[in-house]
Image (cartoon, rainbow over all chains, first blue to last red; front, side):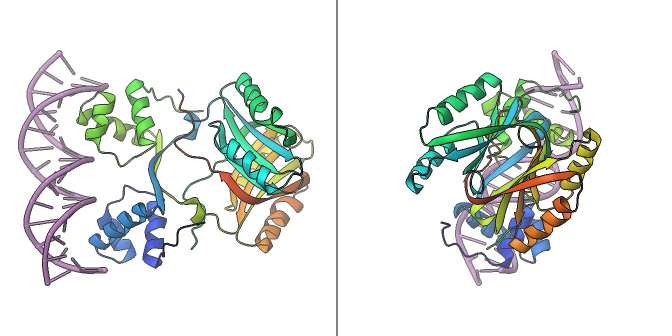
Length: 160
Length: 160
DNA sequence: TATGAAATGCCATAACC
DNA sequence: GGTTATGGCATTTCATA
């Protein structure tokens, strides 16, 4: 549930720009969106304070990240109702190895993406998170060989 | 293959910090890493110029992104050798709907994450990328219900 | 080739209209 | 939302090792 912050077209344009480059001076942004520098800065500050912009970060060359192994895990749960699903989800979210986790429909219930330095670390992860959890009926591991596309933060469409 | 840029401990510390907050003043960074302000700014500029830092972006609340549908697709290919795999991978990488694509081992060959505004858009995607491609033997769709964990750019470990 | 220090200039901030 | 004065920060240049 998103806090009901209203974003107008100026905000959307600003977000689009700052998602590509958050070091661009307000002066330059102002020209592009058709506002004064002050207005731009006020809006950006508001967007950060309201939590629409959650972070400002440098993106490092992927080749230097996630070293080791990346595993994709399809997890099938026992049919025990949504409360237990949520409990499992919370447990998964707390693990630092987990880069991504989706609740899905189809031939499985959860899809996890996990990065670990070694196979031993993955074994430990599966033991603690999957094997020792009786709500988990089965899981299947897809070992990442090569990353072909990495989510570009500026690529996903913005909506309101 | 990563360009051979040598990173020392100062660089690593700076990257770690700036991956969490790239708006932090050099003055503050300088204290934390034990360098002068000038040195910090020089090193950051170098890291950006050399491509170690590939982008500086604002991260927007995930609840406002990827609206519509997120699909995870398991793709099984015909066994025709790595050249055709690469061709398929290149085709996939060119599609704007694709947020993530991995070549994997296990019970399938590729794992795609795709965002589309509507089911019709997804149908078009599957037709063009999967059904019309004779190298694709079969595929299976997992429909995203809820995103439990989103890759936090500052979470993955840095290595050299 | 790297650092640290100081002068310049740009930019965000804050208090106005 | 726009305008202006102030303070902070990055940039540049220089000296040094």
